[in-house]
Length: 126
Image (cartoon, rainbow, N blue to C red; front, side, top):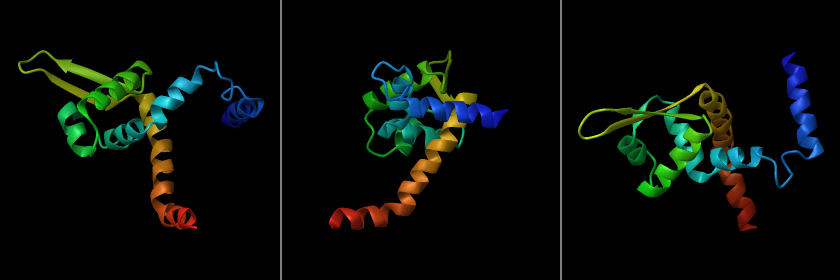
């Protein structure tokens, strides 16, 4: 059964559904494959983290970009946000079941990039 589902998805890709300008999957694809989206998914694979911990672990991300990325991933059902009613506010982020599924694929992509970076840099150098 799962092979049939995968085959149907592959057929949809070949038919150009995701290539269509108005395909709703493009928005989700943009969120999970953005620079910060990929890094958030990688870091949250380790478990639940507070905003400040996420920001500290992801070098170079601004507070604004991290907040926007987390909001987008939360809206897509990939990240879970839990706000604890304490002072000062205590907010935690974790992956949902969907987030767990996509993070495995994103980590595989990031691993490929890391492993093949010397080849990519050599190709760029000519």
